[in-house]
Structures are given as structure tokens and as C-alpha cells.
Length: 417
Image (cartoon, rainbow, N blue to C red; front, side, top):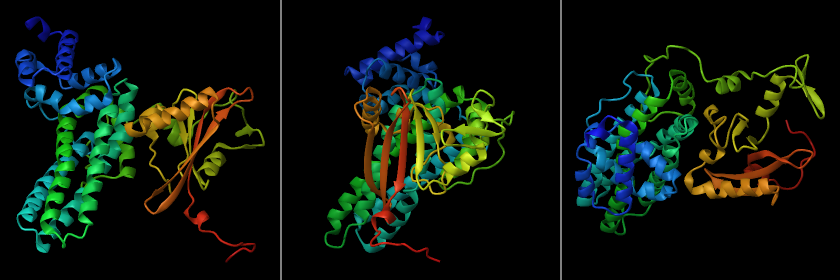
């Protein structure tokens, strides 16, 4: 076994074979015995790297999700020996870890009051359950920052496993939280014992995967991210975090990158930089089909549209989104240059891919959907963009809250004060 220990490539291949064995049904204890020497030196990022390899070889993402806990159990002994990752307040990893500590503490307390209610299903015992759960239900903003800020940068390094596997688990946790909310909204007075059973099942349904996700983040995702991201990339995440918000923490300001600059893509986005000369700019004006505008006028025009616009180019990469005052769907600068397939949860990926494939093949030019969300009626339209020769050049997404439009009646021909 010793020849594998100091050779990362061979060690990864061995770990890959072991995880394949798990998927093929080999007993966990047998695998642990086979792994006895290797587990002592397992690198924090190797398990995630191997899972990504297995996905690339055709192993379904859903199967990786189902067996993710089993994978972690094999190397848990090694992972538990690792030192904490980033500890300076203000660093995104430190903020993530502080939130995990808050969530873990709330989970423990909530579990105690749920158990107390199950033992004595009275109104007095239900109140602390509702109060604590309302606080904990805000935790998914932690996942939102992972999905919109951290995952896009990991994908630039070809490290797509976390966004493919973890995002699906995030959605399972979100669904569990919604189920708990639905249970708490029921009339529990008619049958308190039945309600108590439903409450315990609903709590376990989201608490267990949430706890496991905390472990996977701190022992696998965060160390692997620290190995890959540069200080400027961490800084770009830090600069965008506040807009998405934090869970029960106020990040410190002790951490600052050695070089105060951000990625070129994001810098161009924030400052609205553009080239000159060959791009059609003359005297500060950009020539358009029906006029000419300055760059500041173009930005103002796009940010004042009564709709949200997102442009995905012919390579399926996000190239632009309009930052209107009241965006319907969250967008962060980190998605610029990101494959649009990674901007959606796995559960909706097949729908997104079908639209792109149909547009590219010329089977359709538009696609539209409408949903009800947070009391709003949202109309979502997709348009295939083609040049004068009919060649596909990308997709335009237009989203609009049409609640007020749907409610209009009669006519208005005069200007109201």
C-alpha cells in the first residue's frame, strides 16, 4: 500500500476504485478495511474530485447524491483530523462557518423543543417550536450565496461536482423546510398526537440533511475551495455577499486580500468598461441600428426597463443581465461567463437544456412560462436570437411581474396626478 500513499494521482485512482465499489454494493466495513492505510493521508479535496470524475464517466448525479453520505463515512476518520480552514473574520469561508455554527446551535435547540412537544403536545410547548423554526427557516440564504457566488468560480476551474451534487441537496432541504412550514400552519388542536408525529417527521426531514451538509461543507467543500480560489476571487465573493444577505451573523472586516483587485470579467461589469475603435464607438457614442448612445445611456436604459433581461450567448455562457431596481430573480456578477446550465438547480436543468437545444436546432424561436411566486404573477419568456443569416447567436430571457397588468380593467386615456 505504501507506494500509493505519496502519489496523489495513484491515490485518487485507488479512492475512485473504492467509491466505485460502494456504488456496486460492496459492504462499507469491507471498504473501510481495504482503505485502512490510505485513509490516514486522504486529502480534503480528493473525495470531491473523485466524485466529479465519476460524474464525468456517466454515473448519474442523483446516485452521487444518494451515496454522498456513504462516501463521507469512508473518509470521515481522515477528515476529522484536519485543521480548520479559514479563520479570519470577513473572509467568505469564515462567514459560511459562522452561519453553520449558528444553524447547528439552532438545530440542537429546536430538536429539544420538538421532542418536548412530542412528549407533551400542548399550546405552550408549540410556541417555542414555531419561534425557533422561523429563525432557522432563513438559513437557505447561506445556500443562495454558495450557488450564486462560490459555485460559479469553482466551475471556472472545471470543479463542477459541488454545483451538480450539492445544489440538489440544497433543494431537498428547502423542500423539507417548506413541509415543516405547512405542518406548523395546520390546525393541530383537533388531534395533537397526530400533529406531534407529523411535526417530528417534518423536522427530521430537513434537519438531518442540513446537518450532513454542514459537515460536507466544512470538511470537503471549504478546504477544496481554499486550495483553488485566489485572494482576488475570494474578494470578489466578499464584495457581492451583502446583497444576498447573511444568516444571523455580522461579518467582521479583519480579512482583506493582499492585492485589492477583482477578476477582470467582474471589473468590466462593475465599471461598464468597453473597448474603442473597432467596436463601433465614435466620439463616445456606440452606433446602433436606430441611433447612437453613450455607454452610460445604455446602462440607464437597461436598468430602467420594466422587465428583467438576461442574455446567454451561443456558447451557453451568461454574458449580461440587467440590474433593475426590483429584480424578480437573484443575479450576481459572479455568473458572468458562467455556463447557464450551472445557473439552475438540477431539477430544472432538463427544461433549460431543451429550450437551448430547440433554439439552436431552429425547432422554435420562443418559449414562455408563468408562475405564481411570493404573491406575484411572473411571466417568463425566452427568445432565440439570430443574425441576418439566421445563425443562432444566443438566448434572451425576459421576466416580468404582470400582476398589475392582469388586474387592469376598462381604459385610462388621461394622465393621473
